[in-house]
Amino acid sequence: MSIYNKLPSSRSTRVLTFKPTPGSNIDDDETLGDPSHEPGNGAVHCEWSVISVDDPGPYFALSYVWGDPNVREHDLICNGHLIRITYNLWVALKAVWSKFPTRRLWVDAVCINQDDIPERNQQVAMMGDIYSRAECVAVWVGEATPHSDDFFKIVEVVKAGDMLTPGNCPNLVNSRKKTQDSERDFMYHLLDCATDIVRRPWFIRAWTFQEIRLSKKASMHCGSHIAPIGDFVDTVTAINRFSTLHDFCSARTVNIPFFAAKTSFMSLYRLLAQSQYRASSDPRDKIYSLLSMLPHGAYDFIKPDYSLTYEEVFAYACRVCIEVDNEMNVLGGAGLQYHPSEGDLCSNLPSWTVDWRVRNDNISYWQKLSRTINITNPEALSIRNELGTKLDPTSRKIHISGTALGRFRVYETKSSAFLTPFPKCAMKISRGGSTKEGFLIQCARKLKSTITKRKSSSVNRLSDGDFATLWRGLALHDNQQCKCRSATKSEALYKLQDMPGGLKTGDWLWTTKIDEEMEEFSLASREHKDEIHHFHYGLRPVEGSEPCFQLVGMTNGLSEVGPYVDRTGRGASVKIQAKFLFI
Image (cartoon, rainbow, N blue to C red; front, side, top):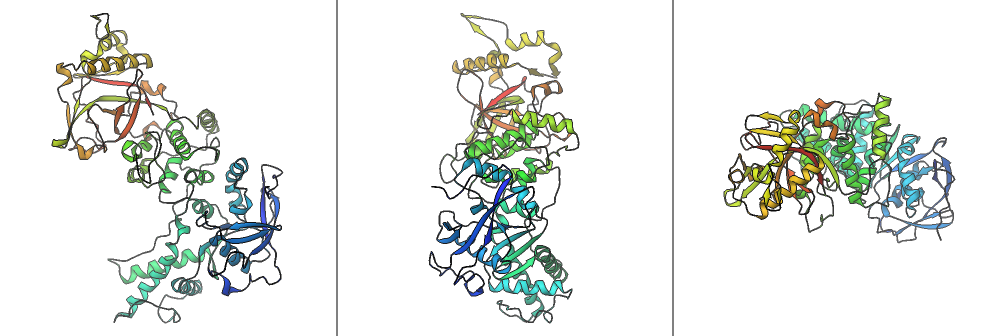
């Protein structure tokens, strides 16, 4: 039987109040962070109550790292019920309540019924409000070490406005080996102290990114130490300044991961790219932990849903990037080359979906070209959300308009791939032993206005039905092993090192770039067309009667030119524009 009662409304949540008990050692600092306590000893007692997030009264919100959720060896007694919690939460509660014993506290692991999927969905959707409306966010970074003890001594020096000198910091425990350069020893010790703090797991967890960015006030707790988050930042800044002044040419500095530039118009793709290095025990939280930081009103259609698999959540996020935001750059981090078929990272992701569990350098690089979201136009926001509500979060397929430039012949021994044009004979329809006029030639005569002549090449816009007919023509050409001249000549040479891993003979070269008249094929927003950047990709045809592809990965253009120069397919006889179905 669950110890949780149903919350009275969708805007309700629970908060905890500490309850001292006879023999309670909550104020005994010697017990803080002492892992020798056996399960059941030193249990933390509290009561929970229900509040409205819209009128909550004063409370703190705890920001911490769960630790291993499968190892719960410590006790929380809440309203007389035993709740098993992780060691990290147990010691965090003792630390925060030892400083603020009367303060109500919101803690996700306890205040949310994690076994009730509908409640979990609803509470996670409110976490932005919970952290932004808290009187203070209590950040628990972990237990004390000699370096962290010294860091909080340095905090007091900086807070007092004193210079960082050995004379102003006489009580530091410098564990470094002494050299003849005492000032350099001092500088390195300051850097070691700051590094001890910022390299803790709290700084690279997915949820803490949102929790600190949305807080109106925050305090850092480390062992028995506490300091306003602003003093922490000022101290790291002062240490970096000291290091730069004393070793300008090769200064070592300390980076604070969570202090990235804030913006109110950052797209989902940009936020995902910036938070790639952050970890979560549940891969779905790589997406859900960012929702409260998205531009207000621009992504209201995205709702946390823990009934979905992480593959479905990742695919849905990429679909939003492509079909709503027109962020085609997201494809640069997708493809079969990033989806191992075995090992710890084996997944069942669609080929066009980024695996957000791992860092991808392409995503980090191309996010610089990310588009901004217009949140000042109510009509545009309405269109976005209407489009977003129509997306299927469980679908593994997506249609993307683009242009096919030719097919590859791969020569592993030469470390090269040749691009060959689509064979003209494959553009004919065989019926009953007689051959009709070339299919694309017919299209050219009927739709002259839609074909742009470029020397010896032509761009052909095909409907879904026409593309399916072409697909069958290519299959017939390949099955008959036709030796037609157009199918054997090469139009461009690539080095395999510039191609996506695993490229094979028969894969297609494709780009998201299309003629303006094809824009109507795309469901994405038409705003800021000049901000959209297009690159080239390898596609793998999937055997079947209807055209269907897997994304292999992004290419790096011809070996002698960069990815920004569109010189691929220079002499290709035919370029095909259509809606391509990816799985």
